[in-house]
Structures are given as structure tokens and as C-alpha cells.
Image (tube, rainbow, N blue to C red; front, top):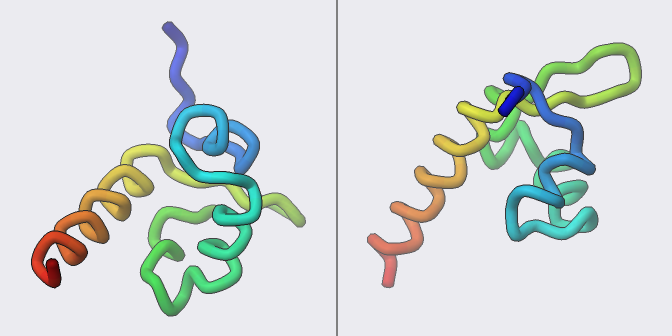
Amino acid sequence: MNESKYLRISDITKLYPFSLGTMRFFLMHRKENGLNKAVLRVGKSLLINREKFEKWIESHHEKTNEKG
């Protein structure tokens, strides 16, 4: 299986349980929520580093578990 290191937003919505609207919200606030570390801008496109995105998800999952 040929897995790309970088994914488009449309790829993310197919592989992870996030809608297009949710991803747009996350990306719009990426500097505040820390997702900017996983984002690469190429022209007008945003590409997301898959490994860093998964680490970002995991870190937010851990924070949620600590609160609850």
C-alpha cells in the first residue's frame, strides 16, 4: 500500500472520523489548537503531515481523558 506522508483535507475526511466542516474549523484555528505543526502550505493548498496529525489527535485525546 502506497501511503503518502502528506494528505489533503479530502483524504483526511475519508480516513478519519472528521467531517469537512470540522477539518476546516481545525485548520482555521490551527495556530491556537497546535495543528499548525502538522500543516504545510503549498500555494493555496494546505497539506497535512499524517504522522504529526495522528500525534495531534492523540494529544487532544489525552487532554480530554485527563479532564473527564
